[in-house]
Image 1 (cartoon, helix red, strand yellow):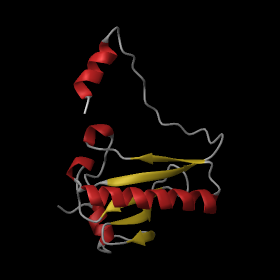
Image 2 (cartoon, helix red, strand yellow):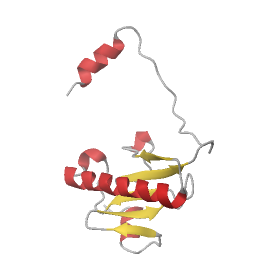
Image 3 (cartoon, rainbow, N blue to C red):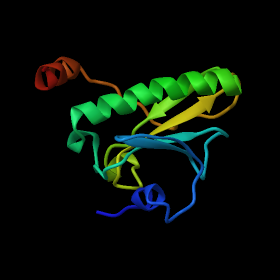
Image 4 (tube, rainbow, N blue to C red):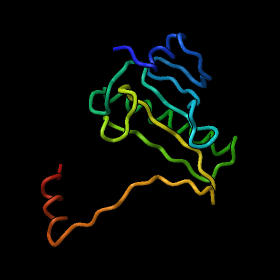
Length: 133
């Protein structure tokens, strides 16, 4: 399946590429939450985390760790968000596995808007039993 990311990988769409190897590549996000917002993208268009082989996913996390260090060192950011939107309903716009790394700064007034829920009575224990692995 061809995606916008495969077109970027193949050089059909220009990008600022920061890293490329046999499993993934890293680019600057064209619509950053903050300047320096990176995308780590699998070379193969795996639609979700569950469809990606473990060794590639593990490699992408190693690249994320390295990228986090570079953002902190070079941009002086105080923190980062590492986000994978995993499926359309989670906000994934491109069905091709990618990890956002967003530089964050103290008092940057950016937030990730997600409403929180509460468990009623023994509901949390029920979920715990259902999801145990």
